[in-house]
Length: 196
Image (cartoon, rainbow, N blue to C red; front, side, top):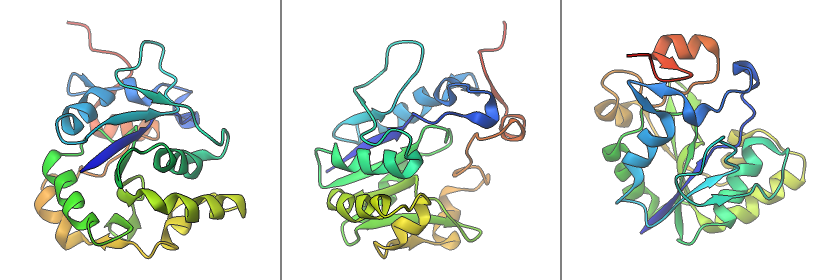
């Protein structure tokens, strides 16, 4: 069994500080889309660093290393996990699907990390981890590493190739994230629900 952690504490500087988890995609908030995929599959779900204006839809874990960016949030997710395997998901990825997450979970039985790679780009914030990988990632953080992919590379992850991703990503948006205004336009995201 595995648990899940949604990393929801980013500052969203390129989006003027918007709460990315509250962005609306196809009429549904990103966080609600993610929870719909994870509920009933993950043993439990936590939000790392959630700072939304309203009540959190599931338990919140405070970042153990504030200001350490995504790598610090990843370490927090693993240190707070209650299962041996943890699915870690960036809070700005609205298009993850249940079949894809379940596929990663099957691969995680034989690896300390399972990381999708699309067009040569690693996606370590949409990946399965062994909880005990926290020690190595924390050591990397303590040594001054801030790049998540570089730290995760130390785990010798099982990489999920473009060919493996293809059946789960027929429309090319599975691993899309909402980082900048152009991303919002490309994926039809809004800061609030459209007026009806």
